[in-house]
Amino acid sequence: MTVPLPYRVVDRAVETHDTATLTLEPVRQALRPFAPGQFAMVYAFGVGDIPLSVCAIDGLRLTHTVRAVGAISGALHALRPGASVAVRGPFGTGWQLAGAAGLDLLVVAGGIGLAPLRPLVCEALAAPGRYGRLNVLIGAREPRELLYAAEVGGWPAALTTVDRPDARWRGEVGVVTTLLDRAAFDPPGTAAFICGPEPMIRATAGELVHRGVDPDRIRVSLERTMHCATGHCGHCQLGPLLLCRDGPVVTWARARPLLMVREL
Amino acid sequence: MTAGRHGFLGALAPGHGDRLLAFAQDVSFPAGTRIFEEDGVADRFWIVRSGLVALDVHVPGRRAAVVETLGEGDLLGWSWLFEPYHWQLGALTRAAVSASEFDAQRVRAACAADPAFGLAVTHCVAQVIARRLKATRTRLLDLYGPPA
Image (cartoon, rainbow over the protein chains, first blue to last red):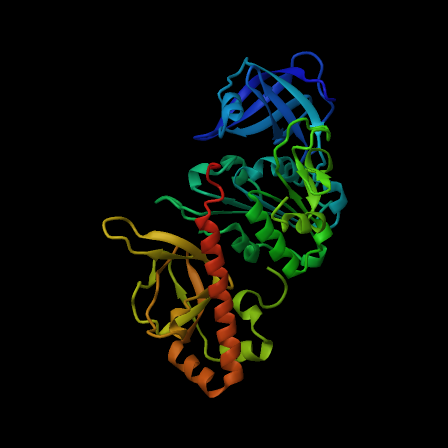
């Protein structure tokens, strides 16, 4: 679906000082169902549209976590229940969790990268026995910037670390890759899902390959400027890939050689 | 965490790991214990078996700044291997900690007497230092901060 459909904001949850989660309901017709890892182009009227991953999948509703970092994201962040937006989608590749049946699952999120991984974790938790051990490793800048804190507290085997602890923080301090030593997984039998800043993705995926995880079983979500979301404009080109169409989720085997090219 | 030894001991060849462990004694620290102070004499080191230790820096007029935490399998302390054998940071337990404790002088003497063992231990300590340096540099990038 490339024609934008009207949606209404029905709920807004404050996550951090600059991040909120918006729940949208279709005004009339709904978009096709989204899969975890896919994204929508969400249009703030009169400002513009940006890609936002789905962070929860609940019937016809769409849920997106948005961080106010620019004009469009700031406008979306400022919306309140009752406000209208236009939405296109679903776009892009998903995490393809079904292909990881029987494997240990390792989910590694940095900062707002937890948003697109959240529905994957929920799907894995909803199917106990289908997968091996589930580990969720989360890195954030500060404790006050942790997303979905109450929900994450209820996830088994979720470990969190921050770069800058405050006086009340009693947990881990350091980069998210240090949490790999605390996770229980069998590298040759593991599927990994990573989203966060690109240097964090590179460091995490590289460490996992070093430990014996198959690069084809490591999926990473990449970000480039997206505009049309339909594979025509080329804004999100990464070498031979158009990330709106061929991504944003790609295997590490495919992504690694592209991310090492400075010109891309 | 994978099968067998992991962390610092997992990086040592089994023979060297066994030899190092021959110097170990089991210790435990309650939560909130100051294991060592910044600039103190680095005459021991530890491999954490369980619990969490915060490495911190004393900042006059402010609370100590925690720069990293160490947990199961991690090497606690590397200043014992390099002159002037003074701690670069302080260490405070965040939870009850059990660890293997090593007398630094005895391990240094064993490293000097057996160059192969010494090289293996030094190599593993250097790996720890390199990993922590890389992590520090990564955090300097402030990757999770707002885009420039």
